[in-house]
Structure formats: C-alpha cells, structure tokens
Amino acid sequence: MFSLKEYITPSSLEEAYELLNKNKNNVILGGLLWLKMGNKNYNMGIDLSKLGLDTIIETEPQIEVGCMTTLRQIETSSVLNTCFDGIVSASVKNIVGVQFRNCATVGGSVYSRFGFSDLLTALLALDCYVHMHKGGIIPLEKFIKMPYEKDILIKIIIKKDGSRASYKSCRMTATDFPILAVALSRCNSSWKIAVGARPNKAALAAKASKLLPENPTKEDIASACETVTSELHFGTNLRGSAEYRKELAKVLVKRGVEEICR
Amino acid sequence: MQIKCYINNRLFNEVIEPDMLLIDFLRHTGFTSVKRGCDTANCGLCTVWVNEKTVLSCSVLAASVNGKHITTLEGVEDEAIAFGKFVADEGAEQCGYCSPGFIMSVLSMKRELNDPTEEEIKHYLSGNLCRCTGYMGQLRAIKKFLQQGKDGA
Image (cartoon, rainbow over all chains, first blue to last red):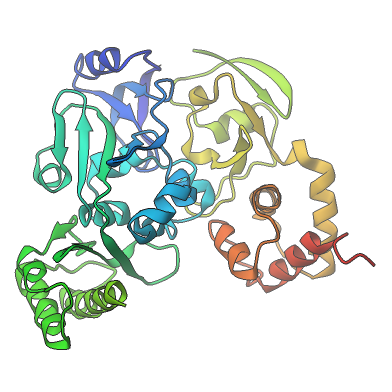
C-alpha cells in the first residue's frame, strides 16, 4: 500500500501543475486503482476532481474526453457507443466490474500507458490525440512512445473522421486482463491495425495496415495477418506465450477486418 | 486533515490521515457491513455507493469523499432484507461474506437498468465474486426479485 503525506484538490490546472513539479514525490491521483497497488511513499497526492474534467463533449470535428472521466462513463456514453462502431465503449466493458469502472479514469489509463490497456489499444486505432497541460496536443501514437514526464493529461481528443472500426480481445476469464487486444479502423481506404497486451503496450502495425486495400480479399487479409506477427514484438508472460499471442493476433485481425468489411 | 461527509444520510465530521482508504474510514466509523476481500480491486466485497454510484471502497481515498454522500448496506437495510428473502429462498448464499458488496451492486443495478436481460445482469455483476455458490442461485434470486410486482397477478 502506498502512502501520502498530503492530499490536495487544486482549483486550477496551473496550480495542479505547479504542485506536481514542486517535489519529485508529488503525484496526480487518477482512479487510484493501480497506484494503490504499489508501495511508494508519496509526498502529495493531487486530485483533479474539482476541475470539471469528467466530461465527454462532442463537437462537429471531434470528441473530447476529460481525464477524470470514468471508464463507466465511457462505457455508457451514447456518443462513444455510436461513433467508430462503438469500439471505445466496447474496449472498456470487460474491465473488472461496474464498481471498478466507476473508479478508473481515462487519464489514469492513458497517461500510464499500461501494456494491458484495452482502452489504449482502441484509441490507437483511431485518429486520437492527448492534450497535455504543458506539452500541448500530441498524437497518441507519438505519446505512447514518449518517456514519462511530469505533465498533466487534460483530455483525449478523437477526430470524427467517419472511420469504421472493430475491437477484439481474448481473455482467460471474462474480467481478466486481456491476453491480447486488437483494434482496427478503416477511414476511406486507409487501415490502422493496433495490437495491445502483447504484453507490451499497444502499437500500430504500420506495414500490415498498408497491405490492406479498401475491400481486401482473403489473400490480402492473410498477408496482413502474417505481417502483423512479423513486424510487432510479441512476448511471454503468465497469461500466454509469444507463440500463442501471434496465433491469436492472426485470428483477431482477420475477424476485425471481416467485421469492418461486412 | 478534516473531512465532512454523509454516511447513510448522517453527517460525519472526522479527522483522517490523507492516505486513509474509504473502507478503513467506514469500518472505523462503525459501518462494519463493508468487508475487506482481495484488496486488489477485483472481488467487489467492499462495494459501497458514493453519490449513488457503486465504487470499490478499498480503492477510494476517504479524503476524496469530502462533501459527498456514502451509502453502505446499513443505509439500505429494508431493501436488503427484501432481497435477502429471495436469496434465502433460492439457497443462493453460503458463507455470506460477499453478500454486502453483492447486495449493494444488485440494488444499484435495479436503479440503473430497466428490465435487464440475463446477460445484462451477469455483465453488471461481473465485478462481484462469490467463491461458494457458483452464481446460479444468485441469478435466480435476482430475476425473481426484479420480477416481483411486475407479473400483474
């Protein structure tokens, strides 16, 4: 169990940012679900819940999801259940239970860039950006690869580009971490294939994505599936071996492509 | 630090440590229906409501409920007893340790979902683990509980 010497609810993002950088042991509190599993001794916990960052706002070009939005809000959001074939909502539905998802936040999931993150995988397949307080707006694909910096993730931004999308995961039991997660999208004739829980954090399979035309044949799909397994690194952990994950990746990518083309 | 919150509609003004968890705060305050289970946010035993939403009290800081309304099993006693009769009739309980969190989730589901299907019930309650019953008795009890008064008989 972690410890905190002080708990603060700042009244502005600037104040939160200053507090965060005042001491190396100050930390932003998200849903606390992962943070509390560690044994770190923190100086100050900074709770952003008074800053009104728990909203899902749809405008014409994009959807903005505040960092303190819970996974349950994402799951039940009519906007996110509709856009992109509902993959953002679908990606969080199997994460433990309702009471867990009422606690877990978007900011905690995305900023932490967990390897097992279902949400990160789904977002990566879309035209998605993170808005950092100091770092500005950064494409999610770039953010995933960046080192952890002491900044505050304010919101995520998903561009409404009319993508068709599909999300698939395989789990040992319904509410466990995924053994593998796959998200795909097709915008006009351009495909994106994201694979997470490899068990490394989600990554795009760029070469495989380029192999898919707007309406791929069986051969195109088979070729893309093979390329996914060769261009991305798959590892072994308690939930599955690298070899098993590669086989799963082929199946889930194939199903995803077929679903989008249906 | 000082917090002020309502537990089962009763105002509490307490001095707490910044890293005290809600489960410890509630049990310390006398609401011992709240049970500690896995402590890893998986089992749902410690489920309570904060502002009418189910949360895992093992994963929420007591400091964060300042100004909020918390409901434990003690706060929904009449409904819990009513549901408990269905659970007993179906033989859906053995050790009973998971029941407080399970009942809080069932009563929350009743408020949130309108006429849920079996799949929706299972999905809503997937965060409440029971290691005795195998869930089928619980499922029967929930269906009958939700159905009561709807048959028009």
